[in-house]
Length: 219
Image 1 (cartoon, rainbow, N blue to C red):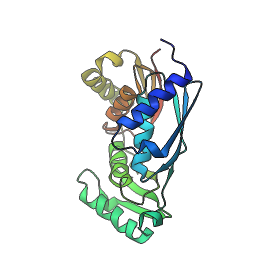
Image 2 (image 1 turned 90 degrees about the horizontal axis):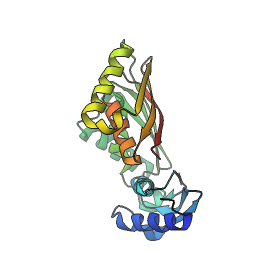
Image 3 (image 1 turned 90 degrees about the vertical axis):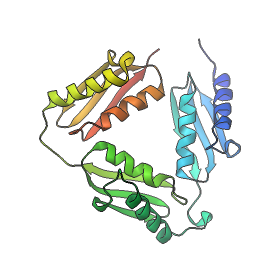
Image 4 (image 1 turned 30 degrees about the vertical axis):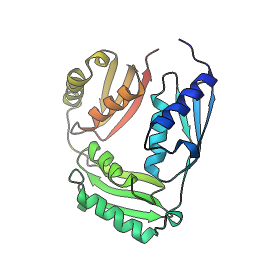
């Protein structure tokens, strides 16, 4: 069923109000041709991302432009030096992250992660570990998955098997291509949440260095 932009805006606002991680009163919402633009201020980078995901959850939303500004570290009472110590501690305390192989740089609340990891999933886990810290305004994830000799056919088979186990109703509509550790996913999924789930499954596969996401929402 077709939903107009005004109806979508109402639904997005309600979804933001429902999400306890988001202060909806500080966020503006505009919708044009099913594309949502979020503006305003958030107290953390994690809240900014939570607002973005809330908008994507609304049926009928095609794209989200996230222009929310995150409060600077100084406004939150934290210096870059204090933030750097917090980032290091967060990486060290997360058992899913190879912290000794990761270096961080903090400038005006923006965190840059560099180094090498064994799995694409570890790139995501490292970013997750730091993005919720007070004072973090943005995360630039420059972590690289170490190159290894892999058989593209074996990687593709492993991914397709995972899709069959966890997302059987989408698996038949997804095409998996592998070239030098880079996976390209194309086809259709039913929702943005299912798209995130599929991308998450791929990140656990050994030998995957990057993912080109060409998945579209099933109409």
